[in-house]
Length: 420
Ligand code: AMP
Ligand code: GLY
Image (cartoon, rainbow, N blue to C red):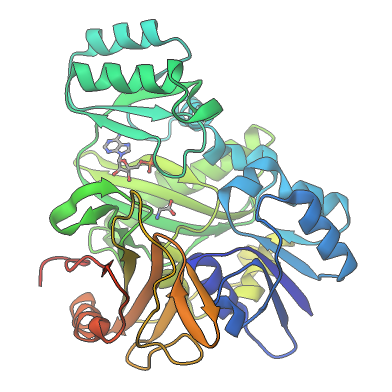
């Protein structure tokens, strides 16, 4: 059978690795140098709906997995289905749960799903007046649309809030995504990522995880796409898990059904465990990156079996099993990331398959290969995964080996999973 994964980062590398199996021919668009060791990479951009549909039709793909937020929000799954191609991922009318924070906040309010209190605005003057009335800081200002993970400002005072509002609504900082904004209460607690498969009836979560978003140790520096992850997340106790399942995971799926927007695919619940229980910070309509690399590494059930069960709405008939123990990923990035950085640095320490035997696996986020050598080709470049009986053991393993791979100006956080 022929399977195409749309995307080209670490998450797609992990997805492809989990899909490897006898009788399966794997393709990835556009892929990267690491992915090329497991799949045939085809040079089509992730947002090119027409190009993907054409390729999938001509090459007779049996399944297309749409892995990134933008093509999902733009309706790639709908276009594939219209062309008679089996596709994994939510339809456009369900992907809006990530594509519009205004939508997802209204959904949570209507269906009593715990989240930060909020208001939405399309006019900067009214928004600024609202912040003045609230007069509590920090306060959170969010562009409603997709913004590459950069559309959230935690304003520490009135001036910062005002500046963020004006930049988003009047200054067009995030283009159309910032035409509408959400202003919400600042929540305190511990964040947990829960990536769950759902067929619109049943929800089967993967192991919980904890992302580390800031660029530098001690959570200093700018927000990034994610610098490292541990799983399981120690704050997601059995009790919290039960509360989240009953008050958030299931009610969200039911709410989407009631709205005529049945969600099928992977729903990412970004939660804050507050002293009043878990609350939703955000939803994503796809696997998290780098969470997926860790969660899929610990997934025991065959990913293709799960994806088929989701598409056929038979998820309740199978179990989603995880390995015992823990795993960690530490991202190696280009100096300067998430701001400007250089590409094209030769990577030392990888074998011809883009691996290093000291790790469980090395996932490629941004690499190219020329004349048998690997080079950096993005801000986040490589993700090093180790497993252990617990987080501590996994952490010790990854950090005692990470310096075996490097490139000029590469850097990584030293405290993924806590101080050592
Ligand atoms: P988002 O893109 O919505 O995930 O937001 C990015 C990050 O901003 C989250 O991972 C949180 O760390 C932080 N954040 C977002 N909303 C809130 C909130 N209401 N209270 C506290 N932190 C938040
Ligand atoms: N790691 C956060 C995300 O995938 O959005």
